[in-house]
Every structure is written in structure tokens, then in C-alpha cells.
Image (cartoon, rainbow, N blue to C red; front, side):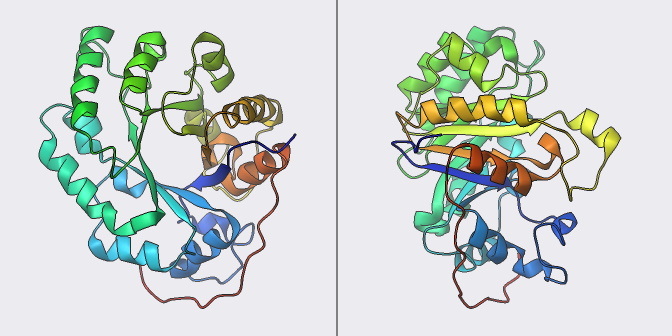
Amino acid sequence: MDSARHPILIGCSGWSYADWEGSFYPVGLEAREYLGWYADHFPIVEVDSTFYRAPTPRMVRGWRDRTPDDFLFALKVPRTITHEKQLRDCTKEVEEFVASILPLGEKLHCALLQLGYFNRGAFSSLAEFLRALDAFLTDWPHQRVPLAVEIRNPRWVGPELADLLRGHNTALTLAEQKWMPTPAQVAERIDPVTGSFSFVRLIGDRDTIEKMTTTWDKVIVDRSAELAESARVIATLAERVPVVVFANNHYAGHAPATARELRSLLGLPEPTPVERPRTTLFD
């Protein structure tokens, strides 16, 4: 596949997986060294732990100091904002989260607002949800922290949502996930570019794959056809904006292998790790 006009950065959804030892991490590598090794092989990472709580200053400084100057982080917005308060009355929580991640400096790529399914008990209609999202995005500090939004109600992924996100220069997340329309299907329905970058997540079918394995050291599901389709969408997106892509272990069984396969499909070069000192900071 031809090189894209804009950069495509491919990484994994997290790095703290002991199961990767022997298949990605060298045998015997200490857990505190995982991030440094990971950053030698991928240019960006999605941080899942911030979904459960805002990170401490020590954590953030550790992430920053253990990675190369051009390495990037995409961090999930805490669930207190997305799932508990459901975007309402959460100014304090947003301010605390943003303050906690700003020390990443230029390594802070964006935040991911991963929303729930949101049935009628949460929002009676798409219109009610969009009003809440509009108010939330109006107050979000876009200049300091660019934002991507992931919707998990398939009926809500349409032109109304895209227009709202576009009005706030916020990226629509395209997720390859069991019950959601694929990136290709979304691109057929609407213009999927709504911000200054595109955000793609390869999530897969968590329930099905966990019946087959809960050890994430190798690919166990052949997703090559789906991955090739998503690669074509990603290449098209990159003709217009930079794209970041994250592979989850649940997609095929081993996120680093999925990320590398996608990199190959897109004709992107394998990185050449550089020799650099390791730190001994903890997460």
C-alpha cells in the first residue's frame, strides 16, 4: 500500500502485559522496563489505566521520562466522567484529569472519551445525548488536550453526531468492535473526518475471545480480512489528516502482532530501536 500523505501512528492499547514476555518482551525483562522497550518498537500507546482513575504526578513523570522525545500518549478519560456522571456536572473531574496529564508536555497526543452504550435510562433520545455532549465539548480544553470521542450505541453513529463533533474539532473514533459498524461501514454512511486527526481502535469481540483464551501471547483468531479492510480505510483517512490506531489484545489475541500486521499492510517501516539508557522509575 502506498505511503500516506499524513502520518499514521500505530500502537497498542496498553503495555503492562506480562503475557507478552517471550513473544514481545524479552524473557526476564522487569515490568518497570516494559514501557521503555515498548516505546522502542511503537511510536504511541493508548493508556487504559486512566479510565479507572486519574494518574498521579509520579506516574506521569515516569511515563514521560522513560520514553523517547518523539513518543506519544493517548489517555482515556476517567469513567467517573464518562460512565458515572455521564458527561453532566463534571467540571471538577475534567479539570483534575487534564491537570494530571499535562506534565506529559509534547508527548500528550490526545484524550479518548470512551462512552458507554447509554440506553434510555441514561438518555431518552439521541437529541438529549447530543445536547449533553455539546455542552461537555464546549467546556473541554481542546487547545491543551485534543479529544477523540467513541460512541458505543451503533444507532447514534450518524450525520448528527459527526456534525456536532466537527463543530468542536473533535475526532470521531472508528472502532472495529463486535456490535458496532466497522470503520468501512461508517465511512460509507458519513464523512468520518471530524477533527484535526482520526482515531481508530481495533477492539474485537471480548466475550468470544475470552472463551478461547485469557493469555495474550499469540494470535488465535484470523482477522486478516477485517484488518485489510480497515487498513484501506486508514489509508484513505490519512490522505486528509494524521491517523492514530490502537490494537487491543482482544482483537486477535496478541496486540503487538496485530499492530505489526497493520503496519505491514500499510507499507510502514519497522522502527529501528536506538540504544539509550534505561531508567528505574516505577509506574
